[in-house]
Length: 90
Image (cartoon, rainbow, N blue to C red; front, side, top):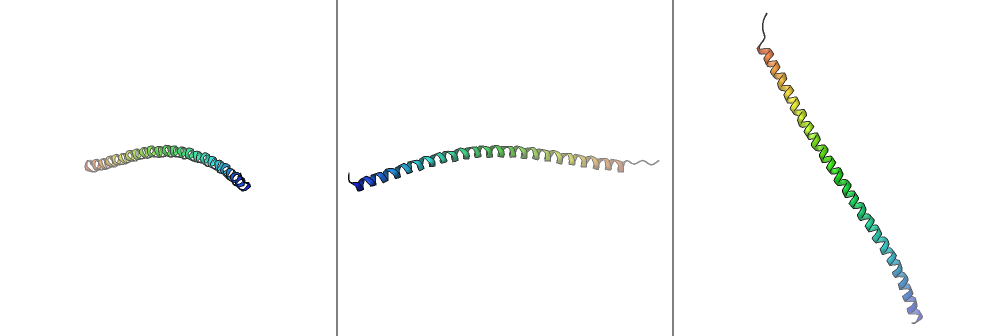
């Protein structure tokens, strides 16, 4: 081999080693990012599920509260009507 070709081969071999190392680091980082994304997705699904459960509980409590208010209003109105319609004089 000529000296110039030997230098080219050595330079290419060095560049190839550098690129192989960069590729390995890049692949490791990609795997880390994919793992983080899976964990984040799992966490978000859990949080969304908990929020949906909380929302259902709040909607039920709101409905129960509204029903209780309606019943109390009905009782008050009925009591008022009964007391005003059936007054007795002494």
